Length: 389
Ligand SMILES: Cc1cc2nc3c(=O)[nH]c(=O)nc-3n(C[C@H](O)[C@H](O)[C@H](O)COP(=O)(O)O)c2cc1C
Ligand SMILES: C=C(O[C@@H]1CC(C(=O)O)=C[C@@H](OP(=O)(O)O)[C@H]1O)C(=O)O
Image (tube, rainbow, N blue to C red; front, side):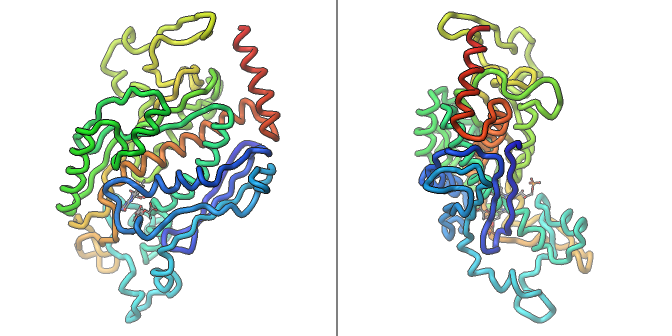
């Protein structure tokens, strides 16, 4: 059975729920490390007031005993502390004249899921769409991805992420070993290792916020310690770079993805794009560069995976754009819900975790076993085969 998960829950409902199936047994879970990832997702300059209300922690309510997975589905719950402020809005039907009717959403926000969701599901209170389309759901995905990250960590695979740019402000390429990159960007409120860019990004976010506007950016994720040959060239839906691209664009507000040098590859000749092949006794086959971002033919090359994601600006604007009242069809400005001005630093944490998930899934497809010990034996045997090749 391949690794899979589902999430459920509304942003202003009682909790988010996730079920993971296909994890091996005997994986030691570090709950503190898991919750640390959830807290990282809440941070970053530009987040709104909601993040001051929440202190995200995952409760594990299935599949783990004595701190280790048993092979059964792992169930996770993340509480919404804000729910207590929304229980009447969530529970009482808005009807003309009652207080809840004032909270009905009927002027869809351009850029959000409101209008499409209302039309598609035939819902006249767009809150029914907003509640689930909210990026609150990414807390559940980070919890799930944090488990995947620990599975990868058990086999020496590391995942890092950082912000490349916000608006026009581009950070200098960090070029640090992965542990240092993780440590340095952790300290930064915008998750960059470049102090000049950091200050300019903070100023830009503050200016956007003061103007009732929002701003997006580019984030990068790096995965090290993977062997050659995860994913496959033989079928379109087994190409791991393609699967990662889908996962990245599935993050709320993500509109583009690049693998390695990505779009730059369209502007320069092949001689400056492809990574020359080398072989030495100690390293075996390896590359002189990693412009491919760790992929050829949908398979890992053994070099680090490097992927970038593009996040558009947050759709909810305090200075709202033109919209239409869905009842009267009259022009109106879009409704304003409490909102972030910039969530690019937080989204980089989400990206790390959706990538970790896809990589863990491919890892289990290749080395799959019912316990971590069985997986280790499969991995060791494959590594010997590659070494002897
Ligand atoms: C971490 C994070 C936080 C977000 N916060 C907000 C927010 O406060 N307000 C908002 O309108 N959109 C926010 N978004 C973006 C919307 O959820 C997203 O634009 C919406 O679901 C529509 O989907 P699409 O942009 O992918 O088409 C956030 C996205 C992420 C990843
Ligand atoms: C709750 C989170 O992000 C939310 C994502 C979001 C949206 O529309 O996507 C809108 C805002 O919701 P609220 O109106 O409740 O403040 C953000 O705070 C979170 O990241 O945990």
